[in-house]
Each structure stands twice: as structure tokens, then as C-alpha cells.
Length: 152
Image (tube, rainbow, N blue to C red; front, side, top):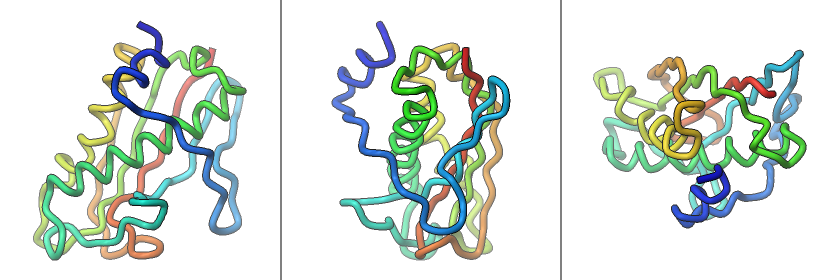
């Protein structure tokens, strides 16, 4: 099954690529490696605000991370000139989780993105990963994730 067939089977329609909110680009390519800028979680087109351990539970954070992964895949498609079949491998995912000092489930929140990436890209989606807790994110977002991929 192709990446696009997997997206369709999961009822996922890739959104338009977001525009930068500050002085950066959404992705940059060096050789066959593409670096995707951090994408914040959005719900109904607006920043998905909240802090894990305060007003958000792990399961909701996981859904937010999954939403970020969908936006990242849309940006990756743009970086591939519109063809996800150029993705050779998802190399690394880095996740920032807006959380209280005593919240310790950043890795479980980030699974929302990692699991979807694995579901869509299969073996090519197995990636290295970091998940961090931070005191705050832009616009109060609950999760921000960046990604590095290798293109064919």
C-alpha cells in the first residue's frame, strides 16, 4: 500500500503547508536531507494551547502530537516537490512538550506523532527521537515537533 493509500485508509487529508510565524522557512534541504521546522499543535486551525500535567492529560497531548505529525507530513510532501514517494527515510523526530515540572510522560505524548509516522511510512518511518518537557511554547501550544528526513 502506498503512503497515499495509507493516508486515505486513515481518513487523513493533508492540509495546506503552514506559513512561517516568524523569521524562518518551513523546511530547508541540504543534499538529500530535509530539515522541517518545528510545527505547533493546532486544533480547528488554531494553536492547540495547554500544558501537560496542568490542564491537559497525556492522551490529549498524544492526539495533539498526532495532529502535528499530519502537518509535518504535509510540509514534507511540499519539500519532496509534491511526491512523498521520494521519502527514503524519516531520520529523526524532536518533540517539545509544554509541561509542568513534575510531568514525566513526554515520551508517551510524542508517541502520537511517532506511531502515525510509522503507520504511514512503515520501515522507512522508523526514526531516532528526542522528547523534552519545556516551560512554554509559542502561542501557548501544548506540543511542537520538528523532523529530519532523507530523500531519494
